[in-house]
Image 1: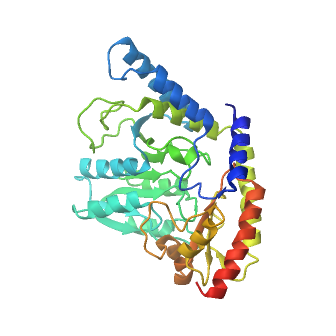
Image 2 (image 1 turned 30 degrees about the vertical axis):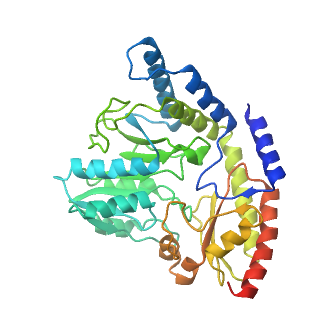
Image 3 (image 1 turned 60 degrees about the vertical axis):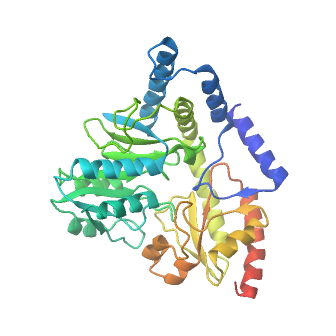
Length: 394
């Protein structure tokens, strides 16, 4: 099935069930072409890629083709790709793998208050094992305050871990400037969680030591992700035993998922400029209309990607609004899908410095698949929920 047919089928499904999906940053629908590839590889490549017979060799060759395609698409040089179950495992492997392998170099780690829970929880774990964690300050746009980073980093700093784009506000960090600061400390490693960036924007990843991402953010099946690392970088394993594509992550290679991810990545960057322009246009349209509501405050900054629009509705609990919109088959989120269920968004608070905004924030995340008609439907039903819930004081 080609892309045009995929879009037509997707829109027909939305029309039939009258559903408006605006939670693409949590996960994306699987592209039918990608799903067809998954099924075909599952049926036609039955050999374990670790096996030495010709079926295994055939499977292993397909992994090599997919790996080379991923490297080519992302412009990777002198990098190794480690296949994982997703970004959470990749983040754990990167941070724990570096921390325990190179703990003789230092025990200091720097991060931001915007990180995914798989990063922050890993750092909490490392803190229990003697590592010191510092949180860098943010500027008014939610980007890393470079002067704050310069003050925090020192000869004992082992890791700086910063998301390329955070999942709640969509703020794109200035990775090049951050790397310049880190480069003055040759014993320090730079880890980037690029989960919300890969497939949406183009990044130069070659000056970054470790990069994590997950395929289900760009229309591939769940259960597959990557940790990209420098070729000469050694890390400790999380999983031991069993041959795989890398000595740093054991387990039988998930061939259908690997090939599907490779194809999904290629499709994600096709017609890149047109897709990005469309998302920018929809974001502006949505933002302009939301700004007409008195109790709405836009939390996403000028540095946020257009795919994510975080806003607060003062006087309405975020979970109440989410469920009210759900009654109209409109699906948005309160925070990152993997964050804890407590009521206040730490990320929104750190960027806006406003507790009321942090207590009432929701996230709309859109895609090049999103239509203006869907945004109009959302705005229509949002007004109904807005008027009703404010009147009831919920």
